[in-house]
Image 1 (cartoon, rainbow, N blue to C red):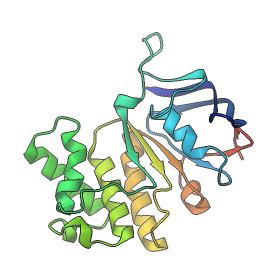
Image 2: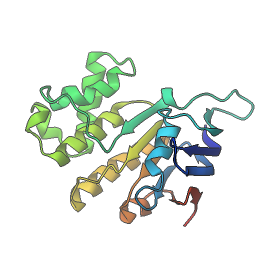
Image 3: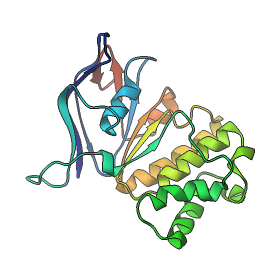
Image 4: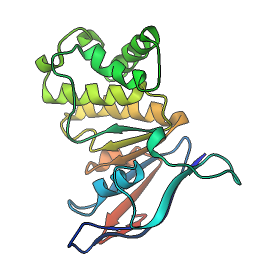
Length: 212
């Protein structure tokens, strides 16, 4: 399976192009980091890949095997966003299990998968706490765990370690990379240490994507 970005261009209304003729191929099992200055379009690229925005030129799709019809990425993508989006009065476990329910998992399966994901990000002992009692960094780990319980093949992570200290960042990146063994992980990050742990790194600047 491949994720293909073919000649994509995009500009926000009234602005110069953010992306110009961007192309990329990601294979199943790969982890890809995208780095670049603030405002260079990294988050826009993720939004296009995940179907939150539509390319103004080019195409983005998944290809299961050569010769099979391409299909959209959106239904196969799970997200780790910069903005932490949680249910503050529900337990940590309940928040994480939502990612499995979205795939149609039973309650028993969702709870089992949620406990495994919480252990992977170092929050197993907080499973029964209301999310509102957690720190900002702990909330970010809840969001990451929620993306990991999904069986969707594409994981899109926008600055997943931005609110975390170095030790916790390492734990979270470990969990994301383990998930990427049989998925496709695309990480937007300013942290070059995080980027260095991915299979490949690309730099986005002046609308163009290139290997640094």
